Length: 285
Image (cartoon, rainbow, N blue to C red; front, side, top):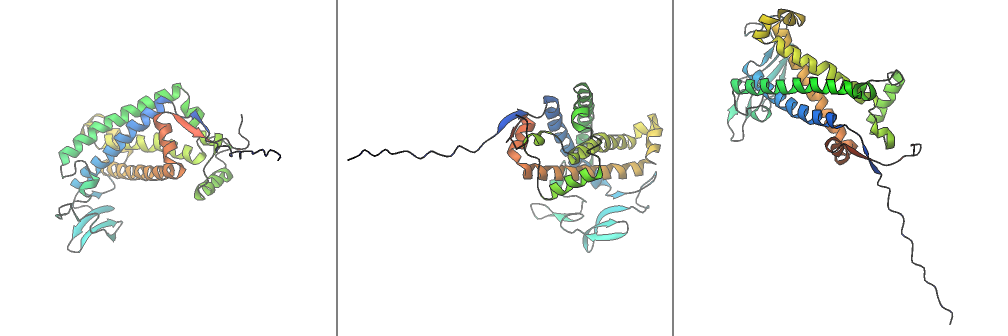
């Protein structure tokens, strides 16, 4: 009887896991986490400070007798936000809310959103001023380092081709369809990232810092021109609040994009600097 040769089935190659490559310099990673901590403390302590007078005005002055463009308050019908004369019911969320023990409060923002979690204007100011220094000094250090290592010019500055409406429109469409860059393209900032990062670093953060200084009585005496740039302390406070709200919106969108793009890979790259890419057709070897 002839011998029978048995051939073991050959297993399919393991799916390509890609390779780890350097994505973020240590200066970028350090500033990312320091500024993230500072911004979260500033936002939450800022809400505590806002609770002391939950209304915003335009001009040089703002007090109870003046008409605010935005106010968070409560009355017999519950909590509400009044924006440009329109009342928006927010009972249970803003203006009037219950704490974990069921006790009702009438502060504008609830305790879980503020630092400290209980009402303390002096406590909020201490936290706010301390981390304002952290944010300001870390921003200066990051900008100086980024000029030295060419991070701004190489990674953040948009090219003329990227600024073309067709290119921006295509990037918006790709994001709307959750089509994120793959392979080598994932190592570079796309135009929406560049515009948002440049807007935060060179517009929102400086505006927040300058309007914060413009609200300081000491700075009013030393640099009265700074307050005049923003048309008064009340206007500076409004611009400060708007910039903070836009920064909070940026953070929300940023976190959503991180989750959608792959949180493990994205967070690892901001901790270790290493990012895993799977080669795509057309990538250079």
